[in-house]
Amino acid sequence: MRARAGHMTRRLLFWAVLALFIALTAWWCVYFPFDRARLYRAVPREAVFVSEHERLAERWKEFAGNPLTAAVLAAAGVNAAESAALASDPAVADAVRRFAARDTVVGYAPKLGGTGKPAWVISSWLGARGQILRWWSRWGLVEGAEMRRMRLGGGRTAWVLETGRPEKLALAVVEGLLLGCYSEDAESLRILVDRIESGGSLKTVLQERLEEGGDDGCLDRGWFAAYVNQGGERVPYAFRYTLDAHDSGGSQGRLVGRLGRVVPPPAADLGSGAEEAARLIGTDPDLLVMAPCGYVKSLLAMPGAGAAGAAAAEGLGGVVADDAPVFVAMLGDELSGRILGLRVPTVLACARVADEAAGEKALREAMDRLNGRYGWSLLPRQIDTAGVRATVLDTGRGGVYGSMAPGERMAYAVRDGWLVLASNADVLVRLLGGGNKGGGTWAAAAGEHGAAAYAWADLESAGRATRNALAVYSLALIAQGSAGNEAARANLERIREWIAAAAPLKTCSIWLGSSGSDTDLRFRLGSPRAP
Image 1 (cartoon, rainbow, N blue to C red):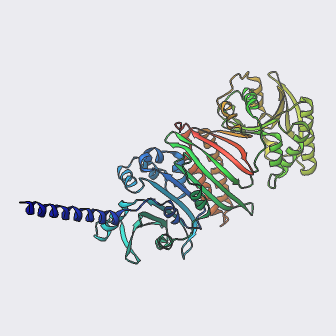
Image 2 (image 1 turned 30 degrees about the horizontal axis):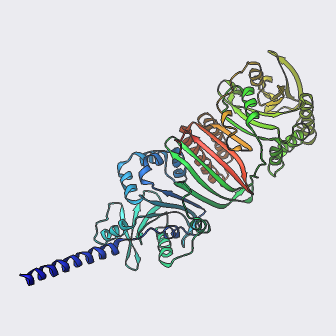
Image 3 (image 1 turned 60 degrees about the vertical axis):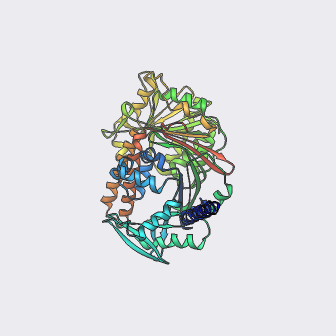
């Protein structure tokens, strides 16, 4: 009896050990511990843009429903209708849940592979799910009418999805990762696979992120580094960004680094200046940019500012203190002006002056310099209408400006310590004589973050005016008929699409400051939920 019991015990022990062995073997076959370095390694060193997103699946609907996401997708050739479908399509949501549940990295390389074609690359952590998906592919369970297999060598298989465009989406599962390459050259996927299998070196910014470690509290972050041609000069851009909030209501985040020719501004306090400017305008503008005069003068002195910029910097120098606020605003709706009878936004350029008489004198002297240097023939004419004393800038020359009605020409005035230059005399009179008491909503946020410069935009109305202006410019390029203008028109069309995509967010605020030697830019688009 005792021998029989011992025999049963040994059998149970054998089967228990066998079951444990099988379980451990299965676990060993599918288990891949999370490795951030491996996730990053798939991004080629040629990438100029890298974006990292955590737990994308659980917040996909909000993330994909953000207009900023649509604007980025537009850069990859995805139109507005397709972007909208991404947020609502159950099949897409299920795919994101399966393949982007943890950490996902996206990168863009202007040239990749032997053909040098641009490519968007994807690296998403799948872990055990990736090994199971790989087995399914071997058993022929991953198929589709628009998919074809591509052999990578070494027993690896990739899938190529035909998109109906020249670009194709190539996918492969390697060591717990889902790798993707969206390019005209599907073979470029091999580069990503080789980087994983050979342990290729990480892109510098990703290596630094890896060494930093820890949780910075952001689910979305990224890096950009490239030279951008501006006026025939290669201008460097190199910055990192973080998104504190990114949902269907809007986005809020920060960019730190070198933003082209943008020079980090000195410390300043815009709070009181913004309140005064808001009372002066009396309504929310379509667009407004405010900064200390000293910073504005440094920007106007930069190459490319033109004759008017140089004259403005020279004129501001003697009468506006370096720490005094200066702003430019674009006004629409009831404060729109007209040019040759056509309704256009009104542009204001305003500076707070300590001495009103000196301010007017400086503006007249700047006008004389422009006349002397460039033959503009501007003639000041005093008016006093509806209790508003102003100076209209007439001209002794013909041309388009000379054919404008007197009320359509530029004018300036001084009011409550502010020198106000307007693109439309009639609007200037209405603005200063209308008894504006409101301040709008933009000024309340100007003092946030202790920024030295601030910008605010009504994305819908400003976007509409900008899109119309770009359309006119595009037509002008068509009329010129130059072969090189085709690319310029394509870029303009892309910008118009981005502007249209951002319009539903309603408003945009930007704060510009400095972080050491870097430019520190914070932004808020729409009304995102608090992070």
